[in-house]
Length: 231
Image (cartoon, rainbow, N blue to C red):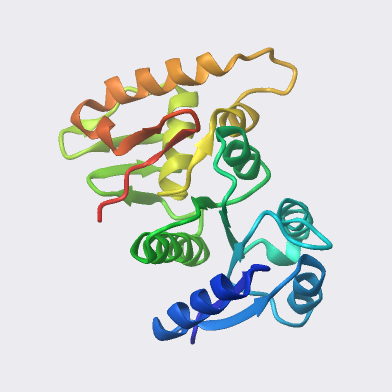
């Protein structure tokens, strides 16, 4: 079945060129020129992926992101922000609100296609692999979700419970960028006063314990961490 991609972009030339590019790649594409029109369209057909501009008439892309991420119907829909807003704070805000990726205009079509495939693959994998599965893998690294063990070809890692949870979360969401704020919200109690530096310390220790396999955890400067996907 063709994967459905929705383009929400108010600039006609960009929207039309994106649609042509994606249709040539075999995707089922719908396009919208403003946010309100997009939300109406989503009610009729839920897309597998949304390419979302930030600066839109009537309803901004960031507002659409908030609405979609607060609606359970879109729990299996990926969202990539495609926008000219390039400041770190913009990228962090979009990721913290539930964006799966962020690409800044102008962009190379090869890079956009690669990111689209990565996000779609991530959601497809999460649907086909239940968390109740005993063992999940990323490259040479494995985690056993029942026994709370993880390791690679050289043997198991000696991880704390929090380190194991962080590694498992990364592997179950391979390729997805997580900001420090998201990691704190996921793995620390809400009543704990945690600085972002604590995340860096935990990641550094996790990498050290993983040995050579620690290189799969990539630092995205100024933003956060993700697993480094092979090209």
